[in-house]
Image 1 (cartoon, rainbow, N blue to C red):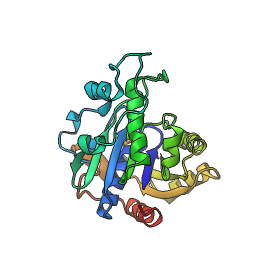
Image 2 (cartoon, rainbow, N blue to C red):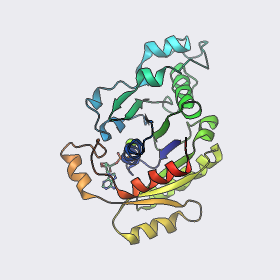
Image 3 (cartoon, rainbow, N blue to C red):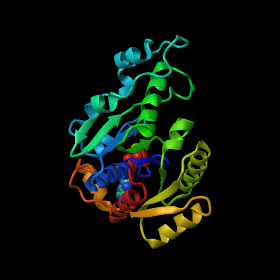
Image 4 (cartoon, rainbow, N blue to C red):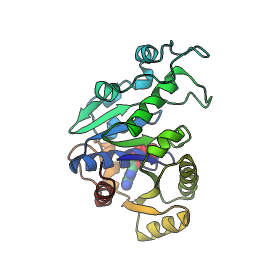
Length: 258
Ligand SMILES: Nc1ncnc2c1ncn2[C@@H]1O[C@H](COP(=O)(O)OP(=O)(O)O)[C@@H](O)[C@H]1O
Ligand SMILES: [Mg+2]
């Protein structure tokens, strides 16, 4: 089961990814959560100890040059486009109560679209996890989906685009959804988040229609703000999770057995 989570910044991608990862583990899945946002925060949402001390894989220069055969930062140099990565999910992941985590760091170098050892390496790792690895994957993405290569996109079973009540978030969701489908993502659905009431849910559903359908809806929870301010992780092991996310995970397990 390969799940990607996308959406405009701040809508709740990381929170939803972390909840989903916990729910899938609670349902007996082996799960690898991947933080693919250049500004990582999944470890902290999951309540990993020393989350801020985790070194993103994209910063592991020695490993990257060893695997690609090129010093990091060497533009135009010859390097392997198919580095060996099969051992890395085990070697580099951290685990907390069944959720394994990989923090990627920046995949694309500041919009240059450059073919550098670092981005080739990270993309190869994500591709491996999505296309070959047996564990369930939850991929917490940065706002855009452009850097998902076609092959990787085609391996994603479902992409959830998180939307909050608001025009810009809905507009971004439609764009992301269109792009993801063009790339070959099999199923793109929206997860409405931070809803104040049922009217919000309806308004979001109507604004997304007909292009994007709601998979589920999560209410705004002021308790999350309190716990955030108190330094508590929204998706720490044992923290309460929205019923909507539990139901979504159950439906995923039913429909995507593997
Ligand atoms: N349902 C919700 N109710 C209240 N606050 C929420 C909810 N979902 C997310 N948040 C808060 O919104 C902020 C952004 O969430 P985050 O998951 O980091 O978004 P993203 O990864 O899309 O940038 C965080 O402070 C988070 O605690
Ligand atoms: Mg995030």
